Length: 124
Image: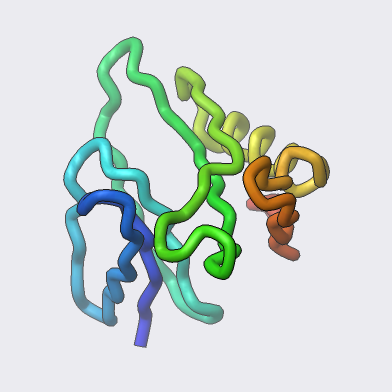
């Protein structure tokens, strides 16, 4: 089964998982924060719309400390940018997140978000 979880905030501040199984498709409405995640040994295809000139992209990270924040996730960091080259620009921002522990600290509870242990090198 190919699937991934996609926490999103389409209904208030609550995240929910959307499981996409083999052979299925999912269309996410515009301007919905989301986090596509695939399980190991799966393949997924993400199609992006052509962005109008001047469109701003955002990357957001949330604190996962449910004990402190309950079901309403606390925003740790947000980066906004004009995305001209997704491959290089996303990589720079994500690598900074992974390297810089202070950028992963929740200002509300002090928790440090984990840095995923994977490479962003598409040539590997």
